[in-house]
Length: 110
Image 1: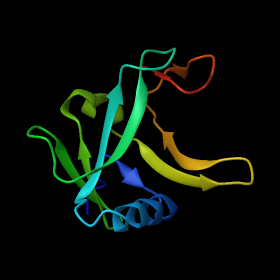
Image 2: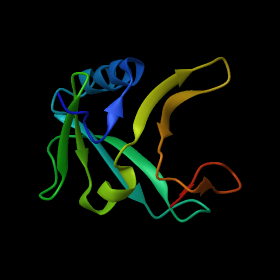
Image 3: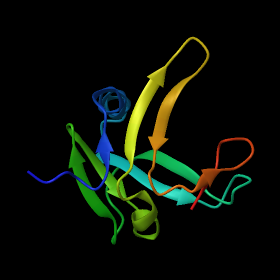
């Protein structure tokens, strides 16, 4: 079996499945890059009711991902994890395509 272009750890998949359970119409989780942050890009991951016309549809660990066409090259090979610590919780994007992060650590630089 081939490795999918974007992978989810089991903890990330469990988190996303729990989020999807709160919205009965959600069919997947949409990944894109938005023009925000001091590095001019920010990961966006939101519940989606259907893919956009040109989205890449990826299935991994029981979750359907809809990957925006404009972000596919930058997101290819990325692993999404979920961390829950006493200080913060949320999705963590481990992307081998990043050349660095901005000063605040929020925006990837490609």
